Image (cartoon, rainbow, N blue to C red; front, side, top):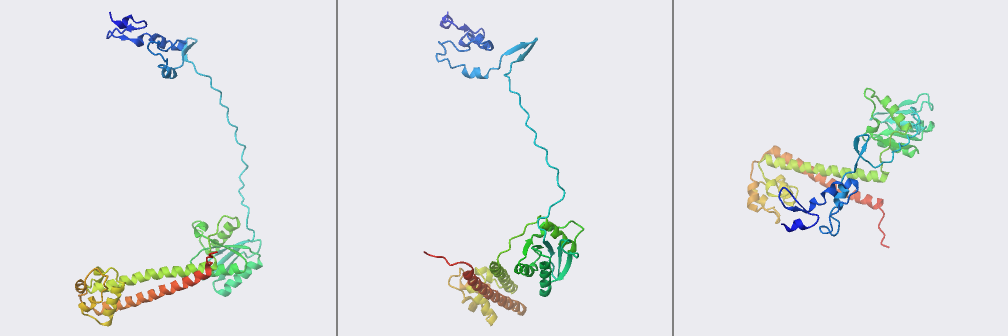
Amino acid sequence: MNVDDERPGLKTDPHNGVANPFRAWSGSAANADNGGDVRLPPSIDPAGQSMQRFQRSWPEPLVIDGGIMSQARNPQPRRTRKASPPPRAPFDETLSKIHSHAAGIDIGASEHWVCIDPRLDAKSTRRFGAFTEDLDQLVSWLLERQITTVAMEATGIYWRSLYLKLSEAGIEAVLVDPRQTRNPRGRKTDMLDCQWIWQLHAHGLISGGFVPPEQMHALRQIMRLRCKRVKEIGVSLVEMQRALSAMNFKLQHVIADVGGKTGLAIIDAILAGTRDPRELARLRDYRCREDEKTIAKAMTGTWREECLFELAQARKDYQHFKDSIADCDTEIARRLETLLPKPSYE
């Protein structure tokens, strides 16, 4: 007789003949719904913790209600419906005017169209010229109608003179991005544009852009001119390289920069009449990577008068733009001294 069979609470599995300790408490585990003890005997589970995780995962007991077996559920509190928000006020289709004394101006190269409130003048839309005398008449007409704010599109550089005139007269000038005042398709005339700008500005539907102070604007204009000169000096370098390549001179392949010390010295010598490649190679700077022999081979080509003329013009342009950049640097430094406060070391 097997020793396991003599131990109380153990049963032999009929399939393999081995005593299975879990057969003894399987019945109580199956009746867990009826409140039975599902814990193992102390001889198997002294701590009594083996069935805690199974107790949490077992389903709820089944109850019979009118012959129908259903699973009992814990009563859930009934959800209360949220109170509906108060009804919205009816939409007002009319827009209120924010600027009663406003004007809209359509800027042009030769003429300006101005529109104000029809209640201020029977002829609310007028056309003015672009000369200085015409700008003075435009500002005087706005002052007579007690206009306090004006909106205009940033059209090229034509807005600048009128903007300064309005600022000097004490009228608020609002510079607007043209994308904010885009008119519907099919309604594109100068008169309709100024009327549309006035309507948008009067109802506060457009916002003005940033306009720097006069001193900062002058400084930015000089800096833009310097950037333009830097681009143009690059074009001059390309033209010099193209003229040399047309004569089969490979100067740009043996030196790092045609506009450097060695490159300009060789170009100036060519324009002065030097044609010997060895004499041109002796003008190399000691920091050049290639030796005189390689440079002399690169400066052997076919001399052509039209290419030399193009080279001379490009060299003059290069020097002109270089001097212009130096003048811009001097002017920028002078304006920065007056614009920026000097640092204090107290």
